[in-house]
Structures are given as C-alpha cells and as structure tokens.
Image (tube, rainbow, N blue to C red; front, side, top):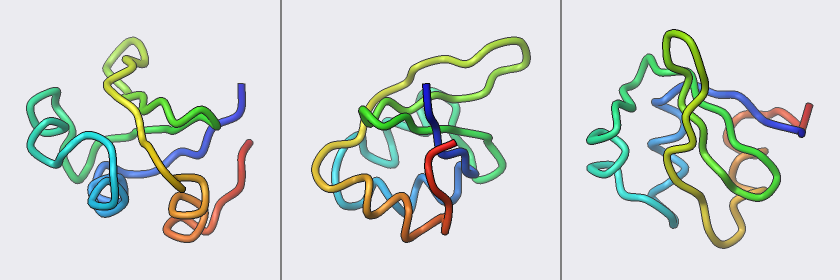
Length: 75
C-alpha cells in the first residue's frame, strides 16, 4: 500500500478542510510531534510505540492537499 508520511502538525493543517476535527485527532493522541501517514484511500494512521493505528480518514480533495502541504508523492 502507498502512503505519504507527515508530522501531526502537518496533518492538523490539512484536516481543516475536511475529515476529523483537530479535537477528535487530539482525543486519539495526535500531537504536533506525532508521526502519521495517509494512504491513497484517505485513511489516517498514527504511529504508536509498536504499531500503526487507523484513527480516521480524510474526505474531499485530500490527495491534492496532502501533496501540496508535504511536497511528497505516494511511496
């Protein structure tokens, strides 16, 4: 599966346009220093100590927002 990885801080800027709210992400443990990744389907995964947890999803034109915000492509 292909992902784009980013910091929690970057994710919190992206979600303002759709998907879970900043408060919902904070409730599941996303902070500025978190490591998160998004797949092409929009699923958001949070890196825990020993695993990745799916914590929500992005909606709308998230692919363009993710690429513009991170400068990365799916890998």
